[in-house]
Length: 266
Image (cartoon, rainbow, N blue to C red; front, side):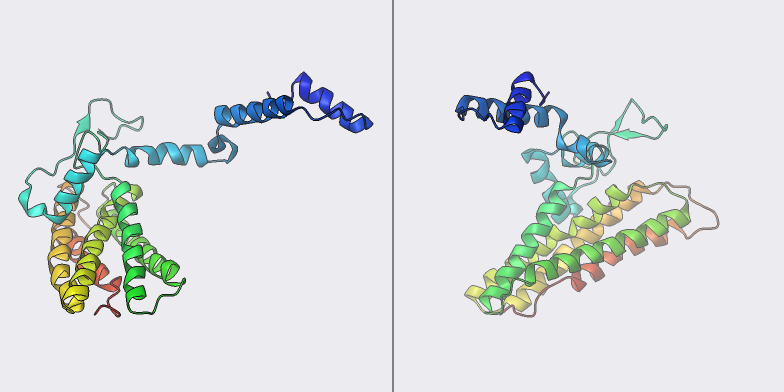
């Protein structure tokens, strides 16, 4: 409790003008009490809805080094894998839906760590590309970030509409994870373009040569993931499941191309 007898005496003395000499121990005690109070209550509880949001996001960041290595390999080389089914936990959710293992225990589980770090890496590499060409401006960072985020949000909305028409359940956060894995491929593309452009001068060609691989890999990854997420039986009046899966996978080529920043590659 922040309002203790010591704090009350100090407030009374200040109000009556009888301010005692400053005591460092008293100040440190007040600061320590305040810090302990904030630590125990938490900032999340002070903002309505923030604590629930953090609890919901926590499983998507439950990763370790082993998972990150395996998941990055699976995104870039999905043709080498055959198992795409997620691990179910015996205890279901309160609403009766299936409950799945976290990323630490299942490499097929979606996460937000790799997409967020991939986006950050891609934006920084784009800034480096602009800087090498002498065209860097502070506005590059928010411009590239906003273009990527807005494109991904529109992509998630389109996919969510497709799931709605098929009457298939899906989590918005899961879609954010799956559509965010493209930033890993985009980072590899930009790194390839910058490296080859610096040493050989063929950065633009190298970027798109790598793009053919990463876009194909991400598209195949989405193909397998969506085929596993969408139930075999969907709405009889909705779009065909096979066409929607192919459409979701093919959209990765378009979005990866649209957010590419190759104007200043050598």
